[in-house]
Image (cartoon, rainbow, N blue to C red; front, side, top):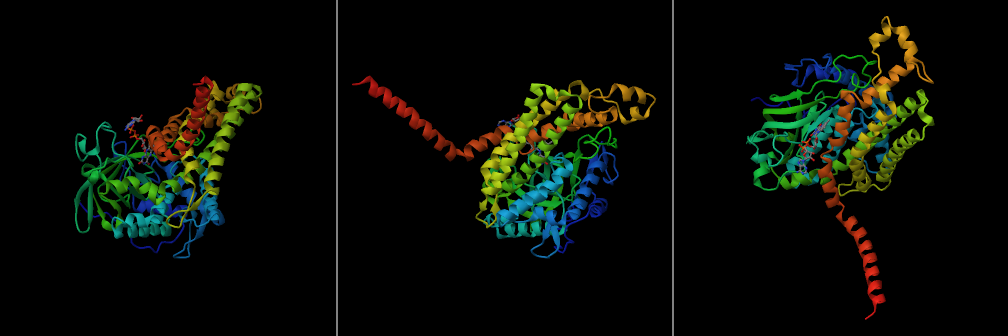
Length: 504
Ligand SMILES: Cc1cc2nc3c(=O)[nH]c(=O)nc-3n(C[C@H](O)[C@H](O)[C@H](O)COP(=O)(O)OP(=O)(O)OC[C@H]3O[C@@H](n4cnc5c(N)ncnc54)[C@H](O)[C@@H]3O)c2cc1C
């Protein structure tokens, strides 16, 4: 076992990065990414990853094309840094953050759930709520602030991993077949801790570092204490391995796989083979109750959900535009049920916009002095979208019908049947060469492996919708009781009236 090459020292970063720096770091410090039985030495050229990697790099270039929107002046170094690291103090700050986040979401149509903004907001939230972490140990709050500043000043990109492997969900972590199935503390030294075991998933293993935080479902008691920790380490830490699923890219053409070839962010199981983590990189430790409360108390979950709703808006705008182009191309917009379906997507879009607007308008300074978006609209959004997104994909399927599979490839267009294709793939308002890429895009959105994974992502990435609903009912109990009181009063009034009418 060797020490993780933590970079959380050296706060003198260069500020906001450009794409070339993102690629350089991946080449110089490659994470131990495993793909199809082999370790990937350079993800920037590997066919399974390069599409997503280059899109990621392009996003960093994009922030320098829109510096007024995407960047702000670091409060410590004065350098330009990514706005998604800002700790908002005013409503205007908050709106400037969502405007900046929309730039990347528009660039990826919301199809790369893990653009770096997502975890940038999480770590900003944890740093803001550092006093909560310090209540357990003053080092932990200081660590969170230092690590956050290190990320901001170096503009690093993170993945995160929360949940244990899906072995036996009926028993606690300690009662799995092997106590080291789920990642846990193996030993503790003066210098740090050693982690052994596994975490179920991390999207974007092509990032620089990883946040390893607790899921919020740890059982209280000493038994789960070794599984309760929050830390962050570089992705090239010795002993850390990412085992990837099959790629949706693999060098496919942008024409044939317009989304998969560009936005493959990848998902991986994370193995900790005795990974050493210095104390400087630890924010939560063996405190089950504090781990379960940390996301909410620090505000991290609120800032992350703020980013998620921006993603939802961009994604729904994309689906609305796509749906319209499909129906318009084949002259289907005259049918009432098609109009109803378009209206449904539009209503979803306006619903998400209203949630974002309400969350920002009703934002208030939290106990840490940070302008925190209002939670109720965001909580409603994160519980609703997992149902809206699959339904909107169903609508794309219903609109596109067989057009979604009657799709020649790029090679067909260049082959001897080009004239046939030109004739038989025409549509009412577009010729074949316009119709084919449009319907291929719809296919990649609604039918392909990439599109199916998007549906799964939206259903689950923020947590199990069933348990999220349970948390919602518990968390908003006072509001529910207030409504119940009104109904109780009405019921009682009706009963009183009935009893009076009956007489003595
Ligand atoms: C595409 C994708 C990307 C993701 N990316 C990340 C990531 O980057 N980082 C990360 O940490 N996580 C990530 N996740 C994981 C996500 O957090 C989980 O999918 C989610 O928390 C649900 O957990 P699970 O998948 O283990 O499902 P399980 O917990 O195994 O649930 C399986 C089924 O059993 C039911 N079930 C299980 N336990 C209970 C219970 N106690 N009560 C009621 N019902 C129960 C569930 O409702 C569900 O129907 C990602 C998921 C997906 C699909």
